[in-house]
Amino acid sequence: MAYATSADLAAYVDTVPDNADLLLDRATRDVNRALLTSVFDVEDAETAEALKVATCEQAAGQLAAGATDGIGGAAPTSFTLGKLTVNRGGGGSNPAAQAVKVNGLWQQAWLALQEAGLTGQEPWVGR
Image 1 (cartoon, rainbow, N blue to C red):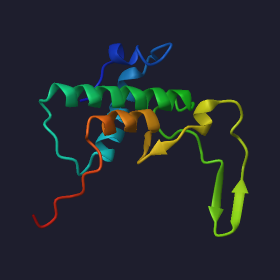
Image 2: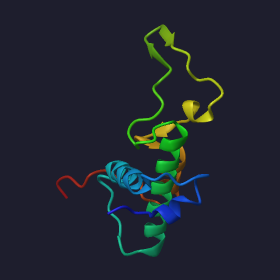
Image 3: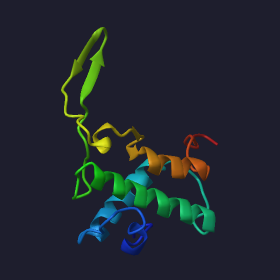
Image 4: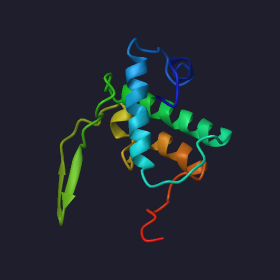
């Protein structure tokens, strides 16, 4: 079950796509993956709000990057290996093509989780 609805997504995009439920399901999986070792109260209203916002931001980021199916996003345009740097272009004027991802999430989605204190938790091993 997604953390957000298509009605929630409407506040983040100009036009809600027909496949909004699918996009939000996939965005929820992205959020869950980023929070894999986090421990939080799922009944807490502030936590639920942060999960909703992050899910909407993730779906909006995918749409802005042209990933209308919610899979992928902008391909990397450069990489560095030692002293070698390779640029493939493609950045263009689309700000989403230049957007930053953190732990697999678009930056705005990650920031919503970070502000709620849901990130930066290591696994509980041997405790």
